[in-house]
Image 1 (cartoon, rainbow, N blue to C red):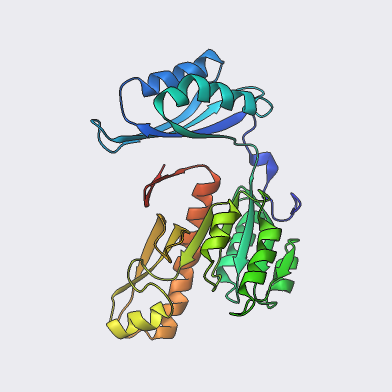
Image 2 (image 1 turned 180 degrees about the horizontal axis):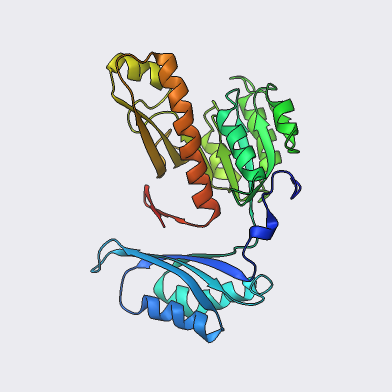
Length: 299
């Protein structure tokens, strides 16, 4: 894994004795009271509380809590079991509770475009992203020297149509088995197979260089130019077996005109891609995202 002085951000800025709780369940009376009473009985002080209901009658309830509790890092397993038993299980509640002092372990997959990858590495080193980038995997060797300057291991795993199954096996060896909390596709120009997605067991965020669902697939800026669009953008989403159709986390756009060439669109689009991917990864690492069907609730 990357050392704390390279790609791990600034540990001193992390909130110790602080945890984040995310919950989702069928809406109904008494949910907030049950959660807050559970925490209060254990001496926790709630720092932040956000909630959302799709419909107060028969809808879904979503909540994000940040709370301070001395020694919570060492007692997290016991806290999870008690919360499940006393609050979550009786209400069919899905939940996650994580130690805010522990940064997410992240692997990045990339091909030859470097702008999103280097932006993530730079922001992580500056402490803007509270995560550890422990590995970069690429199907090209081109970016090895750039990545190694950040003190992060770089693995070149070539992929061809004929060797794709073997390549994915190697990638699973490198990133599977719970080695990472998140995988980021920072312009990885390969389609991950359904077998890989079934076996990896880790959330994956992709940045798509267009404003989905418009211009999905290859060559979006060229097709956007041909169509004469006045807005281009980028979309960050979770990866599913349906290509470019996973739950959307963040999007943004920039205005363009008929004077802009496809190359201009590509350059401006790269700036949007960096910003959108940064926000999506930041929100995931801060436990701000709950997936609801094929959409997301972002606190």
